[in-house]
Image (cartoon, rainbow, N blue to C red; front, side):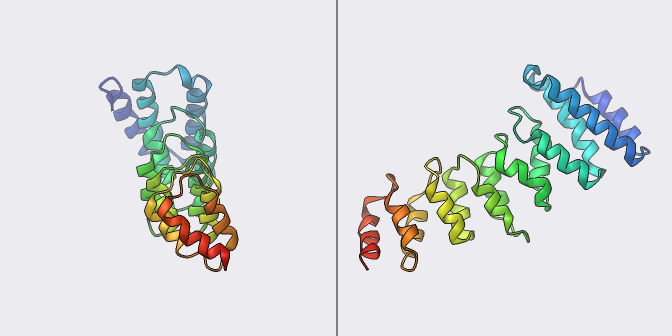
Length: 204
């Protein structure tokens, strides 16, 4: 929190302690509107103020408003970091999903951590796998925890980085999946020492 924002946050905390839910929702929407109308022009300190205020507003807000906020922030290049992190870690994938799939604010470390947690909704890993770019730390978790369909989605994405260990994990399990074997063989970054395994699997 910036020093300039401190008095505002103190006052906001006082108001929120007695504010009705309808006021919270209206205020959140208006504040989000204010941020989005000129987001690209805000300095880091100004975005940090929005981050502090919105973070407090969403602590007690209904699901519908959280879904709306997630969708509105998903493709904003300088969206408030704490707000995005909180929503992306929400157990409800209707809330977390838009950010997990589209937000550039989330780092590979964030995504790997979220993907590696026990979550009940199986769509979580699929949502993360749908991102246009994926780092090795993320694909390692997705391939280890995900389904064959998720592995295939990653293999087909030329902007998904795959580690040697993840390639090995997939190559050694392609006996009954010729299509995955063909997709792996088409990857230019497939480690050379794994190619004989694929050739053998495809020859069967």
